[in-house]
Image 1 (cartoon, rainbow, N blue to C red):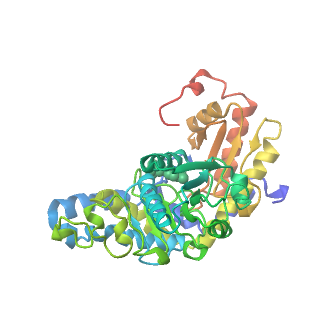
Image 2: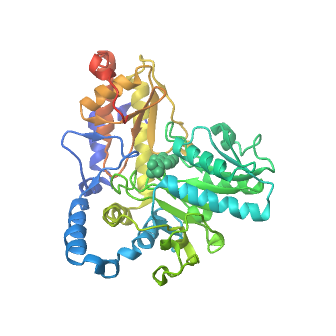
Image 3: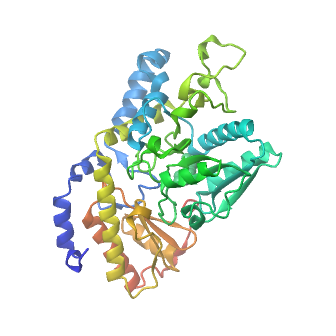
Length: 423
Ligand SMILES: *Cc1c(COP(=O)(O)O)cnc(C)c1O
């Protein structure tokens, strides 16, 4: 990026020449809004309200219980699973959309530990990132606590993961659970080489794709990963609380079992047998009845991705974050800002995170102007970059608003220091 690229006219030109520009019309955002939080809750898809209405009025209202078959409700977890799988390179028949990410992690980790217990009963340690999204750590701690018997979670630093676990990979380690992109800093981990290091140590690998599915190209099947989980409500624009996904490698199909063995994971759910027998394939990861309305709306977001070239998404994402970083360096240089997102493309997800001691108040002042990012402790301002509905001019306008807020201490008003329940 040369300094000549750093003006608003140059950004407008880049928007006009952007091959993904037309996808902006697939989303509805309020006027005068720059939405930089699509890594936390994706934007509303244009078709979402109409699809929800159709499901409620026609499939539910008219079809009633017949819609489990006639409208394909029963098949939604597997049908949507295949759509997610295409986006993350998982192969067909390997993914279901169901439950939340936290619950899917519980099922996947339980399944992996059970397999390890059969082959290597002395391995009882689970490694995960210290900076992982806390729910992942909590779920693993809860599982270890339930199992008792020496099961334990150990937290590792990001640098230890990047180095291939030189200090922490011992013959006690059964399982490593890693989130592909650090939710706070935006650091991206190399899935393939990291998985190889985990396997070389005799452990299994579960990847959490919450911050990478729909943000970058992923070759899940090619990476050698054992299992994966992730959200559909972030970059995949499935809607608030839309169900998550869970993937298992071909090698583990029909080998794994999981403890939340409800009737939806049964081989013949409508035989109403008193004995559980797991379904063939990925369906055994299902538990109970799914939220059909939520699932149907999530499909609209997945279908937008069905038409997108992920290489183009990744290319634009890096162009947007390069621009953001250059503008912060060039136009906010006199402020105490640190860029915490890695500069190397190979280590960068689809966001830019910066720190400032007054981060919370600054984000509050930005949001008041319709520029919506978010704040994460400690002192981190996060800007999620979603190439399908953000442009280069949006990045320019965001950094200029930041400059005004900082230069004129607009953040230093009592109203910007009040915290709500969700930040
Ligand atoms: C967003 C996110 C979650 C959210 O989990 P839910 O069960 O959907 O609340 C979990 N893990 C990671 C890494 C996330 O980024």
